[in-house]
Amino acid sequence: MSDKKTQNSGNAAGNVLKKLVDAVKSGSRELKEFIQDVQGTDAFEREIEDAQLRLKEAKGELTQIMAKQKQANRVVEIISQQLVEHEVLIKDAMQTNDDQQAITLAKKVVELEKDLLAQQVIVETYTKHVSALKQHLEHTERALKDYERQLNIVKTTENIQKATAAIKENYATEDKGFLSAKKAMLSKANRQATAIKEPETSSSMAVNHETTSLSDAQVNEKVQRVLERLKPKSELDD
Amino acid sequence: MNIQDIAIHLSHIRTAEGYTFDCQTIAGEVEVLQVDLNDVDGFSVFVTKTNFQIICIIYLWTEAEVKAESRVEMLEMMMDTSISIPLSSYARVEDRYVLFGSLSVNSNMDKVVEEIITLNENALDVMVAMEDFLL
Image 1 (tube, rainbow over the protein chains, first blue to last red):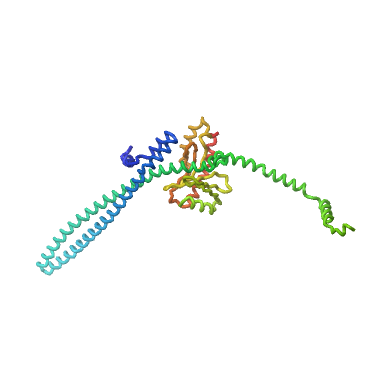
Image 2: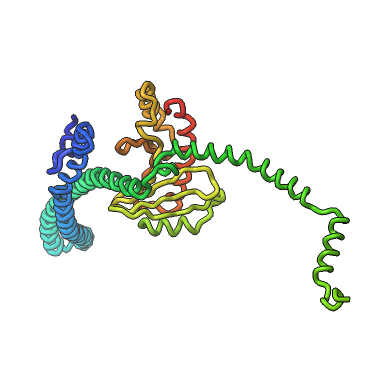
């Protein structure tokens, strides 16, 4: 196992997938116990909460250091600018043979250079600090993702077990094939066999319809019977 | 996105290919949605959700439906071909072999629809392809 893997599995809950493999090997009872155990210890939730807290703290610290780094950078820029300006002034003083002014300005330049060096050291320190904090942040993010991934393994195992139980409970019989595509295929084959018979039934119905249709003579006869039936009584009496 | 959102969406849409869905919620310790494709010879897809993923499952067959003499060959075949099946993989839940696809909970509805249709198409292919291993 690589160092990286060992490191990843080095949290309180250990390698969940390995535990799952052992539980599956041992049987369904152990699998249920595995889910309960991992859930029961709350190790993951605690690890995740801790990691989230560390992450929040580290981000706060990073923001502060980055602000200080920016401030120090600005000071360096200002000093650098002042140095350029003083050097221009020294050149001007030397051109006008104002030695006194040139010496005063040169002293100021020496001072500025000293300040610049000190500020550059500060910037460098902040830069190193920011880099270390960012690295720490990345490690924490990675650890958090890893805890969440491992928690996902347990939650998914639990969810699928419970979902299957719910489906099984909902369909006491498997006749309709909800829990078996194999059975669904069989019932589909049966449906297709019935479907083939259907046109025959329809055509035989058509034949029956034809046989029950009446000839003109028959219709006339029936019409006469209806008229007969509905004749006013007085006419019948006549 | 929760199971109800998926049910409402699926009940109202008609895909570009003309698929429509019939949804039924199954009550239990966890929420499960049964999705059937209307007017298509397909299988029931069961959709469930965890904090991290949406899982769509079709129950294929049970251990009892496998020819004992072909079981190892069937398992090897499943391992060998699983990666080729688009968006779906094999698994076993207790004694039931399943075909499933999982999505991030952040997936949009189009992805869920795509998953359900693809899973159904894959399951039909799987049933035909694996027929010889089954009783």
